[in-house]
Image 1 (tube, helix red, strand yellow):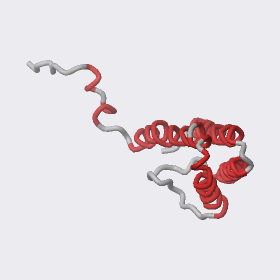
Image 2 (cartoon, one colour; image 1 turned 135 degrees about the vertical axis):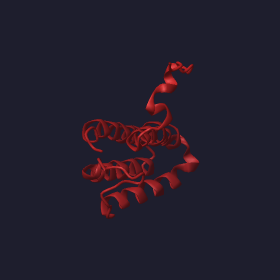
Image 3 (cartoon, one colour; image 1 turned 45 degrees about the horizontal axis):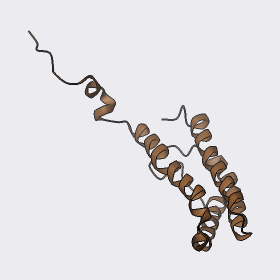
Image 4 (cartoon, helix red, strand yellow; image 1 turned 90 degrees about the vertical axis):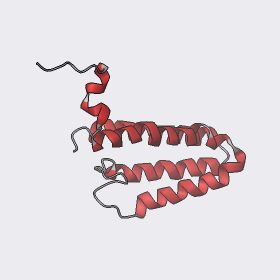
Length: 131
């Protein structure tokens, strides 16, 4: 007769022990990428001493997204679900940088929050069926 294991129920799940690569990428996106982008949008846009560096970073990222070439997989090895939205991301970043140069951090904050929310919507709508 087989003995019953005495483990808590949540440890019996396969995901608890071995998250799939897609699950790892989703967790990184939701708990690293989006919070970092929101932190930049909500906090760093309102620090006057950081504005020149933030403008330079926004313009560098926007240039890379608008004119760079990318492969079919992203930084963490997954499907680049937002590849067709890169130009939109680049435009929002350029507008945010221009807002910061024009001393309008509220506008920059709104544009960067919009960009993060666009990223979440794209993840939900475009990456749902990818491997």
